[in-house]
Image (cartoon, rainbow, N blue to C red):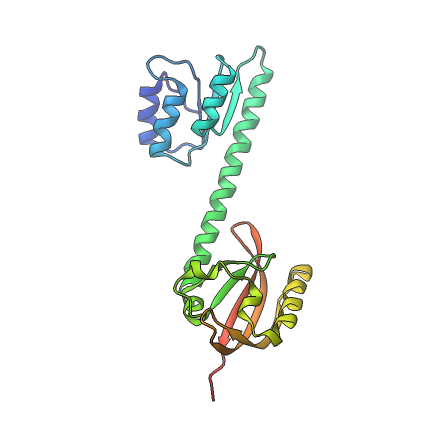
Length: 221
């Protein structure tokens, strides 16, 4: 644990070292805790910040929440408060570390899928599109990825294939297992029909369950 006697000293420490969390008082000389938080958010936007203050009030609590404080704790008499403070800090740091791990996993996934030569589309359980790589955007004749997010999974299938596809889609989420490859007639955004082999598998994207549809184009004879 590192301590600082005031905000100027704390600024120097933050500039020169890496910290898991910052605990700050509110009522300090020259610069209060919320002003310090505002400075930190400009330079260290993801830094966990706990406002631990003896000058508690509804106004200060409201300002703290609006300023983006991660935890707000009012000082009390006795030593039990330090146990509470310690627990708050540990939980906050663990949560941020878990979020960082998810961000890293998402980045790795994008690096892999973005450059994949085959079309890949991710669907939420409600059948809406959450993500599509560049190959999928081209295959589905869309101007960009955003144009695909206004559609649902059945929209990309010929009418005769929709019932079968919906059944596979629902089974994938219920059973949490990949579905065998099957040939479908794909209907693109422009209305063009294309034959393709589609494999689907369950996955997790940004913390939510998805169906990963991987498309293999069938060459026209």
